[in-house]
Image (tube, rainbow, N blue to C red; front, side, top):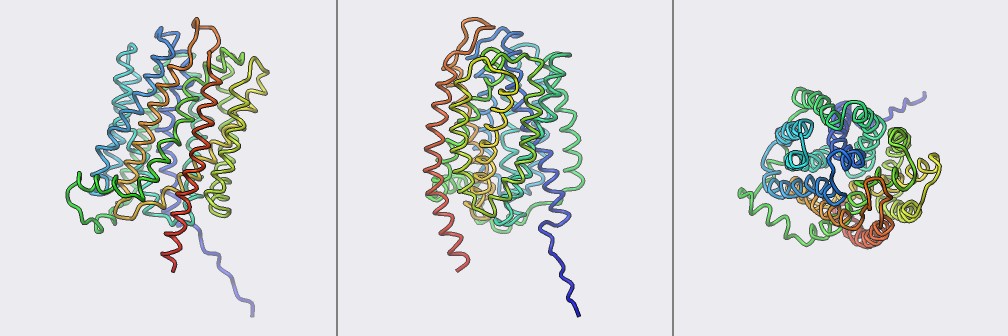
Length: 415
């Protein structure tokens, strides 16, 4: 008599729901940050601001997000993660609404600070929820799906945002984000279960003391140091990506949505595959492959002059494949660092360092690149490429030691 083999599900229906809702939530937060970069060329012209001022607008979000993340990190393990997520998400929606209503540069700068204060904490809370609800062996795949939000923002959000900006002004993309964010918030409020098992593990009542203990553990400091460099690439190059495409590569503003759509379409396919191979081959192995690939593509891309549109699309697709591999694999690897009692605080500090270092990187990038006139090519963009490549090489070395530490710790647990 033949035996019936029942294949066990990798994820439960509720876990699938969590992946879907966190992916959609990340979509709105990532879109809010990313839509500013494609609007850079338009904003610099319409608000009559310099690349340096635009770099400050980008870094304002990151620096305020980093500061609020540090302040919130001590309290991150003291509350139900669902309630914490909803609190900061409502604040994020209000900040984005202020961006959509901003009449001038100073108002936009203030609105970005408000958005960063709340939006910068959301990613760390989401990663803490993932770490609570999913095993290390499946987190690569979970991160692969959640990072699809990055690709979805390119396929749907950024092209639609650019189309609206071209037709209705640069305010309209932010108002669009407010609308879809409210939809996501309603789903979280009604259907997500409380995430509070970590509350039973808390031994430290004082939030500041809990934060101090988290940032002083040698095991965590190693991860924080690596994180500080991981964000520099995106924050340095992306804010000026559209200005470089239009003024240096000869792309028209009308072609930008198509570039982001095609790049995002490839990313949405490769994201889950990268997550799968991160779990199967090894998260650090995929990180190294993605980093080496990114270095090659950054060097090639930043040294281009006027080229055909299909080449611009090809370079963007190939470059983002490397970036996705780095983000997904490193995110999954870093979730293995904190203990269950410290996850919220660790993720909060980690996200803060990422935002702060990214904000500093964006400000520095704004001082490196410059334009003689509003329509002249961006100067010194290849220098940004060299800086990004150097930081990428350093992170490969740092992540090697971090991966070795995690491997030893996980091996001890099994033993």
